[in-house]
Length: 156
Image (cartoon, rainbow, N blue to C red):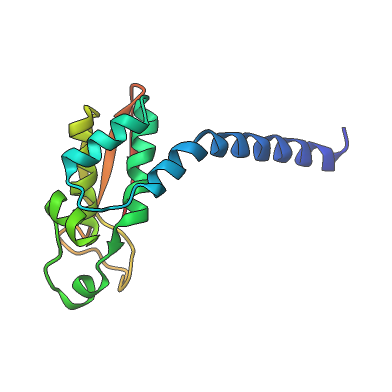
């Protein structure tokens, strides 16, 4: 095999795998985008997810796509030190939050779906990072336990 073929063949196989993995979620993603945040609370959202997805991974995917499609980052609160919604139902109602609100919403709905999750607080190099770490955390994301493993994800 020529050196170029040694590179191209694995690359093509990787692209085919990525495409098929992406196609696996096309239907779930579309259902999640189609569900609009019209007067939903966490219980109603969990119920809608239960109707649309049966596998835990599909439920997580649905929740992730729903949140990232319907909740926007509260830039005003972040930049001006204002309060932002952190209670899950308040995040749904307002349609905006900073990272803690996103994490709280995700965690609450996971609990309602019977999926183990934890809110993880820590540090991120985001807007205004000056190369120094503060003494308190500046970001929140989620760890979920699925298929006998913990996985990190960030719905913000």
